Image (tube, rainbow, N blue to C red; front, side):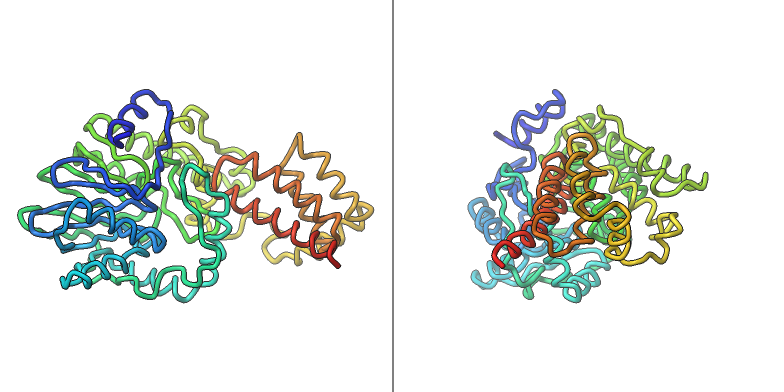
Length: 431
């Protein structure tokens, strides 16, 4: 179905009848001179009449397919490639744009992005193996309707040939291609190097990951700081421009000033509410534990088709608000300078009567309290790191936890825990 038609129907009805985060690598013309290739992430393509301006290069594994789809629509050279931010799924496919230009004997596109993108690329190279590891955990349970498979054998988080920005800026950057004026606005949100692009004459907004058709990725337990309050402020600024067409980097484009403003307001409001509640409890001297188990988002908000907790989720956003404003310590004195997990587990296991007692109780709790069941399963596993029976039970418990979770981030981490124990059990059986 046409993405604009599906978007309007989904938002207006509040009901999802077809996938809204699609990875088809197919191109759709949204308006005269504007197309999008739905991928991971999307690439939006603007034909200025004096070259193409492309917003985001997609990922290493999808960049070539995006370029191929683009070339079914236009053979014009890509004059400019804009990175909405430096995440791998937005810059990793840039080598394909470079190869396309070189094969046609054309100059490389001018790459534009925020001034912090280069530092992010340097950090990714420094922590290459760590980023491969966490992405394998995070995307280990990608829903089938996304049509995407992570390559676990990858050796580079971002390709060595990833293009670095040629033109950078700190706050606002305006440029013109042909007769088309384009503004790039920096705002911290999912990253510190994020921008959104605005075409004032056409009232088109390119939002990057400020809109992802899931709950905002402002928490992510394995990755660096996110900025919920500034994210919300950026959305308020976007509303004030009066956009009539919004093209995100994930999910469906949205048309209509009122519809766009409603979506942006809903997302901003839930982030603002979380920030206000967390800060109020911090000011009252509450611990992170108390905040996590007190602050919630109403079910009717999470039921909105563009706010489902299917990637990130509010509990993780709460932790990032705490981390930004209060540091890493959670307020429990014993966890300031803790004993090793295995030492604590061995002591508690001995007091309880052995790791078998802990895992037996964990199994009993699966139907009533999965959170508590996982605590006990971890203690049993740490106390008996080579016990096949203990780890077979722990694997089953974490598999049940994975299946009970809505967000991809939770599913991936719990699946990784299940697999780790299953491997221990399998090694012990073979031995």
